[in-house]
Amino acid sequence: MKTIIYRLLVAVLLLTTVACKKDKGFVHDNNAPVVIDKFTPENGAAGTEVLIYGTNFSTDTTGVTVTVNGKKALIEGIISDHILIVIPEKAGTGKISVTINGKTTETTNAFQYESSYKVTTLAGNGTAGFSDGKGTNAFFNFNKRCGLDVDADGNIYVADAGNLRIRKITPDGTVTTLCGGTYGYQEGKGADAQFYLPLDIATDNNGNVFVTDPAAWTIRKITPDGTTSLVCWGEAWGMGIDKRNGMMYYANAGNPGSIYQVTPTGDSKQIITGLQYPADVAVDSDGNLFVTENGKSVIKKFRAGTWEPELIAGAEGQTGLVNGKGADSRFDHPWGIAVDKQNNLFVAGNGDNEGSIVNTNQCIRLITANDWNVSTYIGGSTPGMANGSGAAALFNAPTGVAVDKDGVVYVLDRNNHCIRKVVAE
Image (cartoon, rainbow, N blue to C red):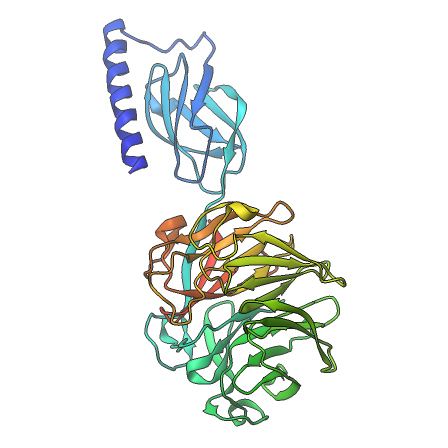
């Protein structure tokens, strides 16, 4: 709606001004300077229409070039004192330059470029089932609040609870089964391994995959060839791993609920308690823990070593889709959480047990490091299945989120039974 209104206003402005200038018989003067007075809006993403105000512009577009931060922009229209352009993709923040017949002038202020993010479907097709394959030829069955993680090579590992399998997805979207396939508890290689409820995934720096199985009260290790072994006993739901030392942390999703620390050798101890349905754990570069407290709809930080708590986002017991800093923001029973290399946090919004379509957070939320500012990274409050940018991208009960070394975000889209990929435009 805002775009439509803006186009109408611009059209009226251009038509009115054109009429005035035709009466005056406007002609560009090659001997006079080209002047830019201002431009509006002063910020925006790719595709934003910007109106440049100035004097001595040329209506002959063949001799006019406009760039934003050095990247050529589309010119939609020119009259004597207005140029309407479209911001190009990946322009970045920088000054707007206008060149007419070889003479260049630029704005005093820089256009503030806002990155936009685009969703595509990496694997899966919206239908529950089982099949290995590439892209939409693969089928998953995410009948629970499943999780995923990504390794250093960009491979994604997914807990496919409905199919009792751990699936591997290569960067090109090719899906294979790493292990599992039948109901039970048994260690083994590939199809010989059995699970009750594979739920969440974490990877280490050595190519190993760890999976929680709360129905079996276990955390299992899976080597790159698909061989499983027991790490420890415990009602582990969501888990995270400290990539510096291999220390694991898991949430038991109880009320009261706890966070447990597990050493690489399998020794486990309770380090935090008194939480209300803690769902998932992420570990930043300093060893601090970040927990989604599903029962209270908040995100908490626990300082490394002392485990001193800090509520960094949301208000206890209050739900909604509200952006803002810290306690001014609102979540709606969040579930999965991930951290990038800058220690920014990504939260999968819909952690309702049944993947409710009335949950207000059918999206991924971003919490920036240290200032705890919350924004909607991608998606919105409407459930659905659509690729695209911003709020035009639709998810249906996102429960798992992971981010790779390059900042690419992967989302386990539960009710759509697929894995979505989010990249900067």
